[in-house]
Image (cartoon, rainbow over all chains, first blue to last red; front, side, top):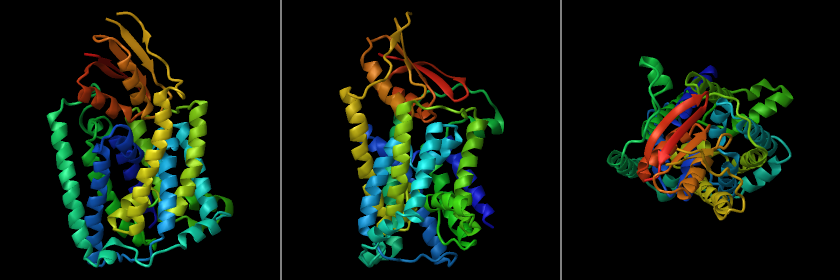
Length: 355
Length: 75
C-alpha cells in the first residue's frame, strides 16, 4: 500500500506550509539572527521521533540496523548541502512545499535537485558517490560507539530538547505577542486555513508523522522512514527509464508533500504563481543542483540525515547535521555578509509618501 | 510623520526581514515603515521581529492571494 506514503506526505506538506516550518530558516537563523527558536523546534521533531522509533524497534514492529559510518561523505556532502540550501531558498522538503505554494524559483530548484540527485545516484556521478561513501568507519551509531543502550541517548536528547523548548516557551510568553492577521473565517476553516500554528506544536505534529512513516513504509518493503533525496532521484530515473519498480512509498511521500502544501496554500489564500527575478533564478538553479549533489554524497538531506538519522542516533545523521549547519553558516556569510557591506545590494529604498 | 514604503514582493525569505531591518535603521524616530511582501514565512517572522524590537504594528493585513502588508512605527 504505497498510497499511505501519499497520505503521510500530504499531511506533512500541509503541516509544513501552515506551520511555516523551514529547516533552512532554522539553520540560517542561528547564523544570521543568532536565534535558536526554530532550531529548537527542529530538535523537537528529532526528539519526538526518537522516542517513537526506538519504541517501535523495541516492540518488534521495525528493526533498526547499525551499518557502517561513511564519515568522509557525511562531512563533505553535509557541507555542500548546507551551503546549497541558502542559495536554493529552502532545503529539499522546503523546496517541495514552496513549489506547492506556487513559487517558480522553487520549481526550478526542485528540478535541479532531483536531476542532480539522479545523476549522482543513478548516473555518471554514481562511481564518485560510491568512492566517497566507501571511506567508512566500522561503527554506525552513537550508542554502539559508546556501548550504551540507545534509550540513554533518547533520554538525554529528550531532556536537553525539553529544557531548550521550555526556555523558548517562557521567553515567548514574556515578550509582547506578535500581531496577527485579521480574523476572517470561523470554525474549522479558521483552524485549518487561518490560525497561525505554534512552531513547537508544528514540530510535534511533524515528529509524529515521521514516526508513522516507519511502519507504513516498512509494510511496503521500503525499510526506512521519511526520506526525500532517493525518491526525488527515483522520480527522474523512472521518467527516463519507465521502470515502475522505482515508484515506491518514498516517491508517493514526496508527491504527497507537494499536494498537501498546495491544498494548505490554496485553502488559506496563500497560493500564487510567483515569478522570481533573474538573480533568484540563477541562485535557485545553482543551489538546487548543488543540493542534489550534496544530499547524494551525504546519504540524505536535512530530513533523511539531520531529522531521521539523528533520531536513530546514526553517526552519519549527526555528522551530516553538524556539517550542514556549518555549510549554511559559510553561505550566510557569503550571501548576507556581502549584502550588509552593500556590494550586492539592489534592494529598493524606502520611499516617502507623506503623512 | 512620514510613511516609508519598502516593496519586497518577489523576494524570498529572509530578504524581506533583512531589508526591513536595514530600512528601519535609516528612517527617523516616529516615522512608519510599510513593508509589502509575498513570502509566506514573513507572516511569522515580520510581526515577531516587530514584537521583539518593541515596534508598534499600526497595520497588518492581506492584500490579495499570497500578498501581505505590514506597517511598523519606529519608536
